[in-house]
Length: 60
Image (cartoon, rainbow, N blue to C red):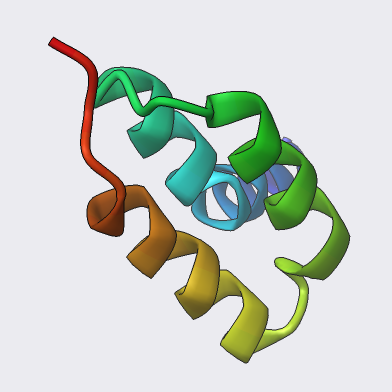
């Protein structure tokens, strides 16, 4: 059970930029998901994706 909770916590932190993109109604959340999936395992990639979520203008 503990391992399951740890894995869920890791996945939440790993995909946090993607969740945030959907919550903030980002213009292109699918591209953020794909980029997060591909290079999010690196610290630099994860930070770049997180910055991207806040950088682009939102619709409406």
